Each structure stands twice: as structure tokens, then as C-alpha cells.
Length: 329
Image (cartoon, rainbow, N blue to C red):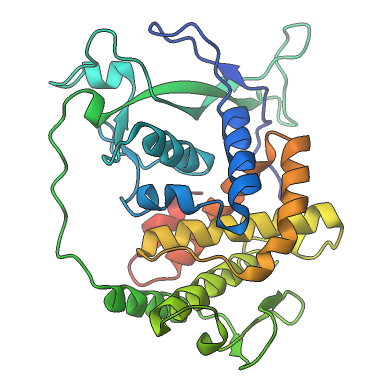
């Protein structure tokens, strides 16, 4: 029961040649390489070096207002961390040109993201590829687009929005968020592991006090991060997003599903404003993730895309937040 494509095929990556840079960029390969470096260096804490960027809020195009999603989120977190940017606003050269703050002469792009571009499909002879109704099929190719950060064009710093919430308030928000999802979560004090059973459709978690941490707050971060990871699996049930990987037990598919759930937890902790603390048992998946990523430079983007849909699904279960689910559809 593999998800059917939305009447388009995915074509090979095409790289956009920017006027300011004639070097071809492959964001998928760049991201995979950097994630591998982090996994090999930091183990289960591979997200830690970008934690400050994650806490800055959603990276977005400040001209169009669109929020970046999927693997592009990680590309921008990494780029901002490497260049010391704290501003989450980005745009293309033409985008900045349309504002009062164009890109200064000689200023180079600091991030490249992938943008889907629709196109009419043709066969090897240049003839239109038709569907069963005789209409030409529409496909997508992905183009690498160069971006400049707001700090590069001298834009004034963003004003903080609203009142700063305390850690206790944020954790309370996470508790409500998880409760609103309506999942069957069974807390078993002393349980040696957390897991989701797709056939029974329920989640098992150890009690918060069973998690590692010097304080109750530290333990709660670990508990909620693990709960969000398992909710990532929960979204894959056939009655929800129907991800076949949660039912197939091959080593490769299982590792891919675990990566998808882990990225879902990363997105969700970022959205909810708490630090991501991976469960210690996630270390057992690192070797398989590293091997899979070394064999397929597209794998992380694929998992990030599925995780984005999982995160949007969870947001869609919250009161008055259905727009988030539509955004990632």
C-alpha cells in the first residue's frame, strides 16, 4: 500500500544558474554530507549544533511570506549557524531587488534550497506523455535556488513577537498539544523502552521520572520529545497518512521510518519551543541511518518530506490550526 503520486512524476534535479554564481549546487548532497558529519561527530545529539537556530523560529521568505519546509528547513538551520545569522528571513536575489533593501554588490548567496517547478512531460522523442484521458501529464523537477539572509542586506532586526513564555509554560503547551492529538498513549512506569504498535494502534511510554535528567524539567523534555517521536510513527497508521514503512519490518524500511519519526520530533519540538532531547535508545539506529545516507543522498530529503506531512497532520488535530495541515499537503 504505497502512497500514490499526485498525478505527477518526480524528474531529475535541475540546478538553477544564478547570475552571481555559476557553480552548480546540489542541496540534497550538501545536506546529506553535513548531516552525516554531525551524526558521526555528535551521535544521537546530531541536532545539537543547530539548536540555537531551531529556537529562532520558522525560517521563511520575507518577500512572499512562505515558510520553508522539508529538507529546506535543515539547509537553512545549517546555513544560518555556519554564518552566524540569527534572523530567520530569506529571499532570492530578485526577491530582495523588489524591496527597498536589494542585495549589495558582491554579496554572495549563503544558502541554497530546492524549489519544485511544474512542467509538461515529454518522452525521449519529445512527444507529450499522455494520461488515460489523453491529457498531457504534468511533472515536477526541482531547482536549486540561491538565497540571501536579511542580515546580508542590512534589514533591521526582527522585533520579538508577544510575551516570552517560560519553560514551564512551554512544557504545559506541549502537554496540551499531545493531548489534543487523541492518540492512545499508555504510560508504563519502569518500561525499558518507548514504542508504537501499529496493529494495536497505541503508544507505550515510560513515566516522565524514568527519563534521564538532572531536574524534573530535563526529564519532561526527554519524555515529551519521545512522545512526539512516537506520535510521528502514529501518523503513519493506514487510517491517517498510511506510511507503509510502519508495517514493513525490513531493516532498511524500519531505519527510514525511524528517521522520519525522529525528524518529526525535531520539527515539533522546534514548533513548540522546547529543546529536542533524543531518547538514548535512538543510538541503535545511527549506524543504519549513516549507512543508508551514504548509499542514497536523497534519503534525508525524502524522510524530511514525510516528517513535514506528519508534523502538519499533528498540527491539524489542534483547535483552529487546520491551515498547518493544508500547507504541507
